[in-house]
Image: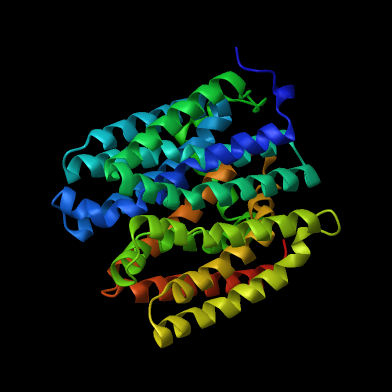
Length: 397
């Protein structure tokens, strides 16, 4: 029998939310230190190795469109258990893969399963909490999320250097098993308004149309997702910049990426203190101005001084800090007016976020010089976000 919903405290909601939402980013970032080594091990060209990231993004992005309506119809707990089980089995198949085709297929299904976390985590919070409590939980989720997936490249580098690249999938498999057990034992059902009729395709499409074209959803969502997806956009090229061009080892690569979570953590700590004094929305102009300055300077710095930890990761650290300041606003604002369909709204948010990441990573991979891709693509995405934010502020719903 599922636990009583009253047992879902703010701390437990934040813990489960962070553990769920981290599944996808961990599955991506834990894996990146292994990319250069996999080319030789699987006798596959760089383009096919990068495809294992892109297909993960495809599965991860598309599946989110299904999980929201399904969780509105049948419940958050049931859908989460099924999806994480799929992720776990796909991780096991990736571990056992002996050719690039099998690995690509396994990564696609990993993406299908991992997508549930992004949707369900925010829907659970929206189901049970409101106002300042929502911001507190989302801020704690952001803190945990910033630390976990960001240290995973370091952990992945240690795994690759000590026992081989294949065992990054062992880690993913055990993570899936542990999360399944914790959800089965401690995660209650939070959706009290389950209605199987919501799973009808016509109903889903109508609900998506209503939400997507509502400016109260669309404008804050585009502002936030274009920022948050920049980190995924550069994920396909950073290993080739920092390992192949700068000369870092797999462990060194993972260690260098710890700079981003340090800045992200600092941002969440500051926002956590600020929210008790004033609304976080007041930080938006400052954060967006900082992002605009960084976006303009990033390609100039890289082109002037060449690839390096400071020139490539420095601007990304500033982006991490600025986004963390206002991430609870980006996560909560699009769902505020759609409590009756929180899962569906969270699905659209996740789809747009990772869809932007998929497009960005695909474009970055097209650059002959990965350093140029790592500088230009995030800059364009951030500046586009600033433009949308400006329109949002001038035309509030």
